[in-house]
Image (cartoon, rainbow over all chains, first blue to last red; front, top):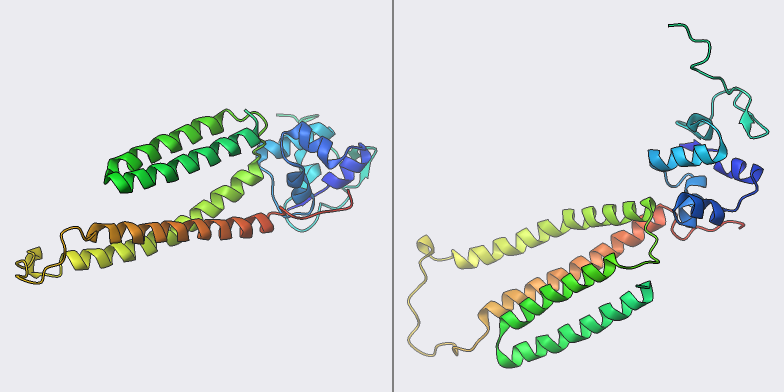
Length: 89
Length: 151
């Protein structure tokens, strides 16, 4: 699983230690997630996404790469759409 | 309770257990060390629950879980195999009926026959500890325990 934690962390200018303390995990856990050696639990993944103010699929991608056009601009990816807006049921 | 205090307490309990084991051997009271061991472990578990500065996160829990599961997978085979060997010795006579006692020379009555099995179990348990440590190191390395980066 790929992730953009390191990018978002740099954009928000926070260290691994600070993020780890906020998430209630060890710094090595954040490092292992960033390096792709450990896939976080859903709980931690949601916490991380919430911390950076993005959707979980903007922070993590299942498979090799993130979808096309998911570039990050100012902390909010370009292709961020609101799936529940404008939906007619 | 601080983590270091817990380690100190665990060490003291360990020393007491060794002393009680010695007393148990001298007095031939096997129940002494058996009971003391259970009480010692209970004290350690209670103390562990009161550690204030312990940080157990989901990755370390996963490492512990995987190492424990793998150790058990191998250990039960070894333990079962050794126990089967013990069973063979027990049932080596027709219908499990023991042979009549040999007239002379007989083995001395104080020979610790059952103690040998305990000794073998201790060897296996020590082996299990080493196995667990090995698996723990393996999974810790796999999940980036000693990785470092520019920070």
